[in-house]
Picture 1 (cartoon, rainbow, N blue to C red):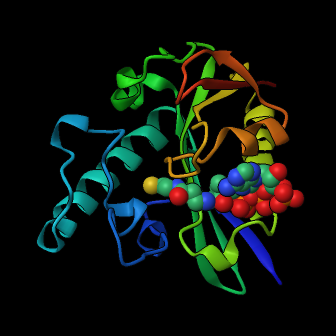
Picture 2 (picture 1 turned 60 degrees about the vertical axis):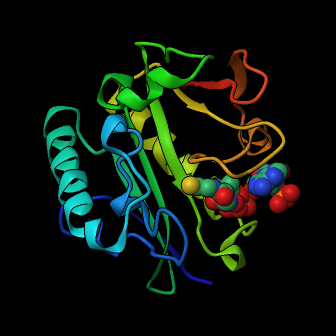
Length: 183
Ligand SMILES: CC(C)(COP(=O)(O)OP(=O)(O)OC[C@H]1O[C@@H](n2cnc3c(N)ncnc32)[C@H](O)[C@@H]1OP(=O)(O)O)[C@@H](O)C(=O)NCCC(=O)NCCS
């Protein structure tokens, strides 16, 4: 299996993996970026959602720097990850364990839609690629994310995945604790 990880750009956003159920693809989902406009996107709204996501990506890339990654297996796009300081992700204000720390970058999404590509180490590789990049950029002290207890159905996945990758629980909440990895 040949796994390749690339930075997310305005050119490859369109390659983010698609699937059959809500929200169709991370490239159409604006849950974190524009929470007040985030509805269950109907097929006909895909273009509009994509344009909003692209605008967000362009702005954050320009102001903060690289803010996402795609993972490919044998040239097939299989996973999408997105991260930024929390003020670029206003949806984070809705979490009881927050707010995320000002010295951290928040992973809002890390998702492998097709079950056949899960538990093969791809998520772990994406996480390492994000932490390696942020360490090199030297402006960030930590990575945080709202993980979920008792279920993996969550934009960035379950608590167990983050504990396994060196994160600790930083902000308590029964269902969605804030996890933190100091760089
Ligand atoms: C969570 C996710 C990102 C993890 O990526 P992954 O490539 O599958 O994970 P890895 O293979 O790197 O896992 C490393 C370790 O993390 C832990 N882990 C990973 N997924 C887990 C899960 N679902 N439950 C419990 N522990 C998990 C395990 O300890 C695993 O090691 P093991 O496979 O040897 O037991 C991925 O499985 C995923 O996207 N799942 C779907 C989540 C979902 O429904 N999201 C909704 C988004 S809107």
